[in-house]
Length: 411
Image 1 (cartoon, helix red, strand yellow):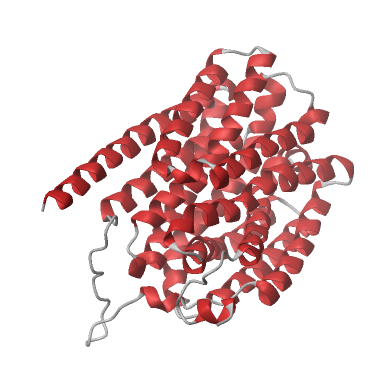
Image 2 (cartoon, one colour):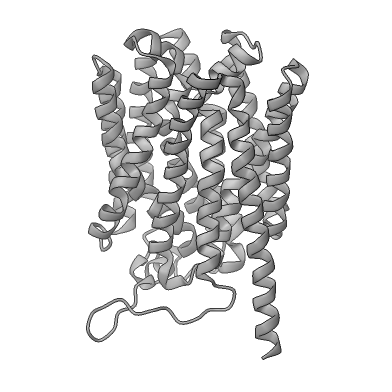
């Protein structure tokens, strides 16, 4: 049986589907690059559209909150649409959003085109987040998520710095136009190369047509799913409160010349890729311990950024931050997928996507408020607080899971 046939019929292929996962990683790269474009183009967009830096940062909030408002409804409406077709369609809509943003005459039109992209963004992550679980065996899940997450790290390495550089050289509008073309190219690649999957196998119905409750599965826990989603929301809230305004943080707070921004962002992304590779090679073997370790590393980095403006210490702390937050999204999603009963994959991943985007949107909004009220130097403390609470939640869930396993063994 071929790999495509095996996946379509609802069984994972015997081999590891590297090519399919790389196509998903490419789609993730494109998606995250489009989502974050205003971050890299914050300064030139602010000047040309004649709005404050906080207003450009709020384009990220608007995008994310559009996801939160629309994703649950759209996921229900498209539940029987082939996942393969949905990913392709979303990329085409992203392209339209980018072309519209490139031509936007003022800030209001920029908001409108970001809303268009946000409407389909939630569908994308609900589909892609669960896709890897359909393609691989359970013991391969951390490795598969690491590969697809590498697309996000490459977005930090190539997408965001390239957008920043293009904004400086030929204008921010051409950056949006270029990524519109990239969206169309990736849509063709997804259509031709990504295997179809039988996503309906995670939906069981009773004789009356209602959704049946899943049978208990070893290692699965709705508590674990909920805590993974809450932890992800808190971490992303803190991360985007700081990362959305990384340009003014580095320029105004750390004294980095604006001309060096694209290089600085490139370095941040390189470290993020190193984190994803570490998950694939080592950290993914012990996801809980690795998650806790990355949270502790992030706390140390935020402490350093919060108390010091020394250039060397700032650079070192930013690199630790890049590694920790490069690893945490993949590790937290792995925890969510491992805790989710198979029949609930689509629904749980939809909630994960909602939580993730609440974190992004609320983080960018909170960052804008703190930026205006207390200055850019206060932003690291938001991430510090988010990581601290998430650390307690993940640690508590790990202890409760051990207790549950011990009880099950004793019976």
